[in-house]
Image (cartoon, rainbow, N blue to C red; front, top):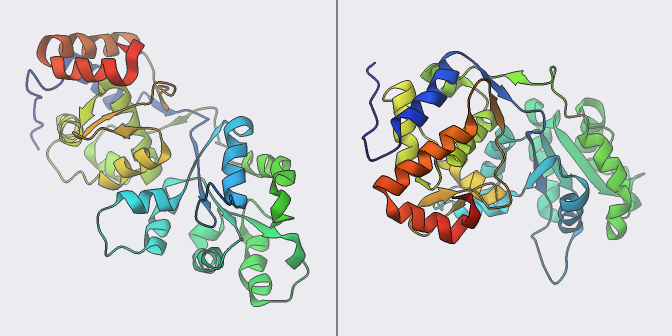
Length: 307
């Protein structure tokens, strides 16, 4: 399949080729702190924060090695109104290392039941339950929670007073620390279109995030153009991944469809051995100064000193 060469004014060919060479040589390694957690709980509320709200706030200061996101944000971003929230959450589980469920509403009990039915999901469930129900003989306790205690790598269920849920912060940190990689850095094969499509959705999403980091600000179409230059023309359905990055706060999308990274979070999630990352980014910026002053102005307004 013939690979397309990027147009002169689209993206800098030298920067694109520099990254491509590392992909072909399989010199791409996922960093050890690329840890994503899907947090389920009652609807966020600034007036009446629930247990999940307090955990997410706690995580900002004490669980910095993990990126937390909630399904509702993605649901709000998706335009397909015929997709229900539970179906989206089922798909989101493919993009994370852990599914944290705080049992504090009827919807979270439904989520627990749905996730516990899927063997590939229950292994990654971390459940926080109200200590008042620790000795309960209910269906929830004897069914889904019992299965979590048997199968999950984050077992057992954490029982705590949900009104003082941060007392369980140390336990949460210990459980999440079980997310480990077999090696210090994991080699990821992105050398072909087939390999790109075969990798875990989470890994594909983080690679797309790295492309945004290098080539920001960049449109959805331009991301596809880069992928085509790497792997040839095929169907690159990455819409959900880009929505997820927005919901995570790892990337932002402007009203005119340009993706960029927040100024306080510019780190790469992959190591590209032998790649001069500063040189690649400099080449991108020089290209934009020459061919796209609009992107330069956007960078000035969005990410200030990064240009």
